[in-house]
Figure (cartoon, rainbow, N blue to C red):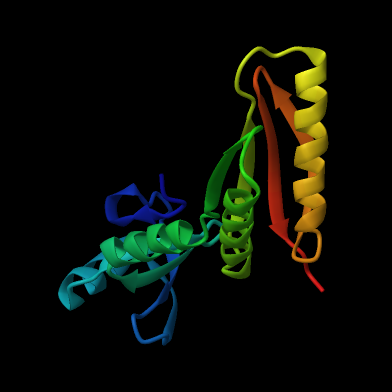
Length: 163
């Protein structure tokens, strides 16, 4: 949904018209503004909802495209790295190197430890300590807010440490 009214959707009788090149024509009747837009091959786009609305000549499709493109470019990407509670030291070093690379590229990293086997308090406690140790090993490049425990998983979202 767009925040602009276009052509026949505009209901005011008088509008302040701005041409495609930025020249302000001033307050003119809506019908005359529509005629000017049609003659020049542009859409009449209401950009302000004041007492006398401000309308601009332009290509409405292009404006919507650029707005959507701008929204998509600001999406935050989260990378996910999974380990198990019985991961070997070498494999853990590789995963930590991967996390450092993601953080250097300004990604957020969802770090997940999957606890394998029977889950009892002792196993979960060991897994929690191992996860905290891993996070402390990454504390020079990352920070985290809290640790979430879900069934057999321990989740942490790491963000780049701003120095």
